[in-house]
Image (cartoon, rainbow, N blue to C red; front, side, top):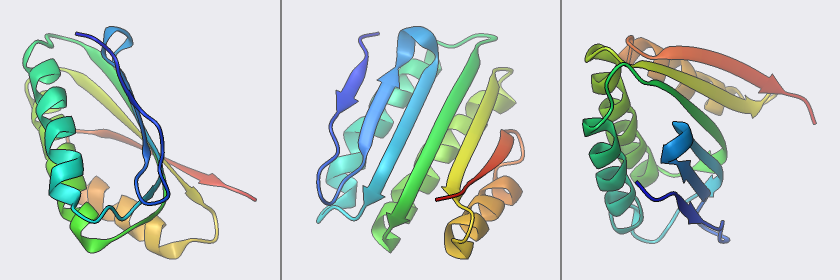
Length: 128
């Protein structure tokens, strides 16, 4: 599957999905005007990729400084697809990067860890 790269915009994150390397990265801020329109095609591509994964070791890097409630819903769909892939026998490591002083992003990561237990969740506080 061809890699997918979308540069960050003022309201949407950088997307760097290197399917051939089993590495998916999201970085920046996420508050697009229409989160479903932005994330829907991305999640569909990820799902198509995951459908072809067997005993894969997938690394997911997420470094979001801010995301709004509509992005949250779409991110949950993204993580749900990854969790199902892990349940199916793939190893999925989620590297969760956040500012060490940002309790909101930290707590969201902890919620992900609780809700998607099949993921190998790794918390990475970053100092500025």
